[in-house]
Amino acid sequence: MSKRVEDQKFGGVWTAEKLEALERYLKSYSTALKKIDFTKVYIDAFAGNGECIIKSGDCTVPTEGSVKRSLNVDPPFDKYYFIDLKPENHVGLRTLCAQYPALTTELRQGDANDELTDIITSINWQRTRGVLFLDPFGMTLKWDTLFDIAFTQAIDVWYLFPLSGMSRQAANNFDSVDASKKKSLTTLLGSTDWEEYFYKDDPGMALFDETNKKVRVTDQSQMLGYVKKRLESIFPSVLEPAILRTEGNAPLYALFFACANPNKRAQEIAGSIASHLIKKLNGGNYGSVEKQKLAELKKDNTIQPDLFG
Image 1: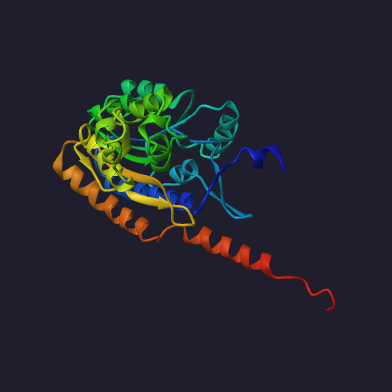
Image 2: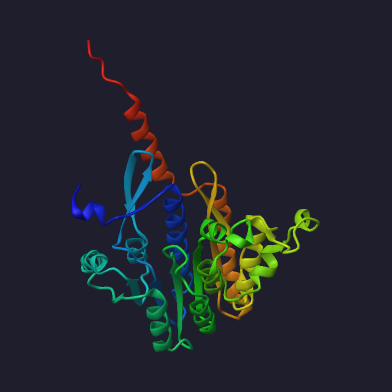
């Protein structure tokens, strides 16, 4: 396998679904703001190398990543910011951006939390509006970064929240949540009150154990409700998320949409577009092209050659 293929970002069918939803939002957003006198920016905080491979079992199909999809939006954004930590990914990003010489792009190499803060503080948001795509690796996005984003009062955010990752860190028995996991959850959620919300004393042990061991009393749906309330504490508008699942139907991510703009009309316009996309996502309506290609590959792989034909 070539180095170029190895460096590509792999994902399941949910990856194709979220990318199509994002692309559709960017197109609608760009069209809606076409005649409005604002500078329009798009920020991709975990951009990868610009390419993506959808994987199902032993079958793979290529698809356009978020970077290329954003660059193809018409009318285009006034400026694009692409952030990634890995130096090797910037080789692909530079090559891809070079194919769009008419567009203004800026590549940032570094921790997304630091780079986002630097970008956000450098922009005059009174005359600028933007869309931000947050597709973090694991639980690397800090709550403080989300606070800075919300403070702009000008950014629409698509945030791929690590639902299964949070569930793994928040073990069923609180004794299994060590200091590292506690710190990770607190950094992700921006508060320590998740402990009180997620865990209660185990009533079944009260008569036998004076230490009152705690157990998790919230399922994933209730935990997501807590996350939504946390987001609503800093963003004026947050929609119910789309749940992205594995092919075995296990919840994997929650794709949140949050609007930082306090203007009710702006929230209504953005929310109506985003809620439609989330409904379609939950219905499994996106990523159909990639799903069809994977189905055809799997079918071909099941055809056995006729050795005596």
